[in-house]
Length: 270
Image (tube, rainbow, N blue to C red; front, side):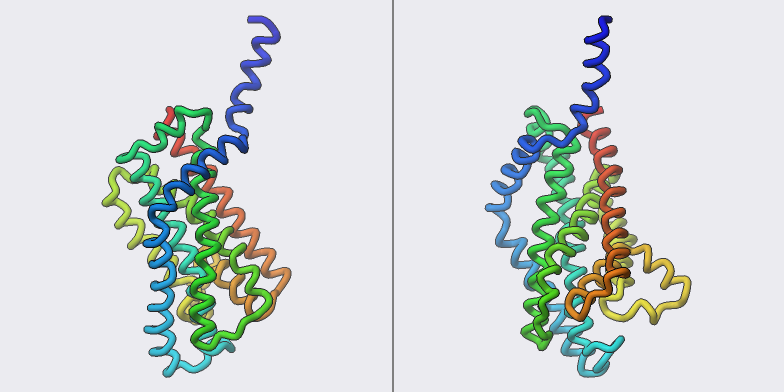
């Protein structure tokens, strides 16, 4: 083998693993085209679900609880439900949408027939889901303002927080879709993972009310850091603490992304 040939062989894997913008743009065109068909149902659930939470818990518990952790309960709940929206929009899309497209529709086989690699498919899907999560996070805020939450300049940061949170959970959902043997197996993940994350994140009650060991576990929950960031964005930033929350969410997205690409490549290519 000549020196030039050997050099090309050594550099080929690095070129294939790089993210190429035309490939990413192709994945996004595919996502946007599909979204034009289902945006109504997705938008409906993104708006109606937080409205139900705020109506049922906010008006029900709110009349009993009054203030919690220094906030009116509607303020506490309204900012917490933002994180719930980011979780539901991204994790469920990452799991079900990815599984259906890979197993039943074989959409990824068609994408990979083009000059697109697995990591570009995963990243393109996750980024699109994360953008949706960031936008839909505004819905519960708007609903909460209708119930008395005062507007604040920091609310402009909420879509960015929702995007970062949604990116991590979208990638985690894609990872889960590559691990489960059947679509019914998502029931284990929803009941055993997503529900505890959702309940123990400071959404409905402060994490400080939990036992000490549970408070320690709660700090490992990415959703808890999203809740804290949203509350600080609305009621006043805490720069050092918020940098820590952002770092945890970014680390979660990086780890989930690496694992998701690894497992999806094993399913689609290897």
